[in-house]
Figure (tube, rainbow, N blue to C red):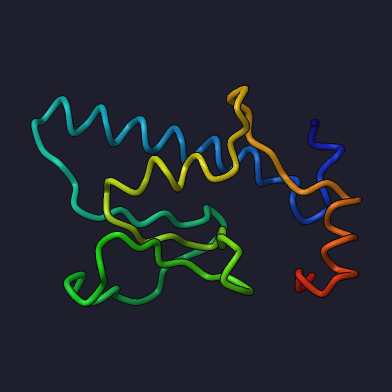
Length: 120
């Protein structure tokens, strides 16, 4: 699978998820170097700006990923708020067994659109 195979609005996805994986790695290194652990992580797409306070994190349930989505089966890419232990799972959401990141192909996206499962 190459970037050319990705549906037009999915072409940045593999690179974006690689960046999030690098961030997870950097967080792990920082935690090890300074002997601390982060409780929460906010992942924000690089073309967005967060304009308001999150509020009290105690309001959010642990064990959940808070994100935008079209329906309950989607994982949004705009932002993700999660407890630290969920970040590795979030990072692997679009990772293939060979270690690369994937996207929807044009054929897959067209099928999902036709079936009414995607809001493109």
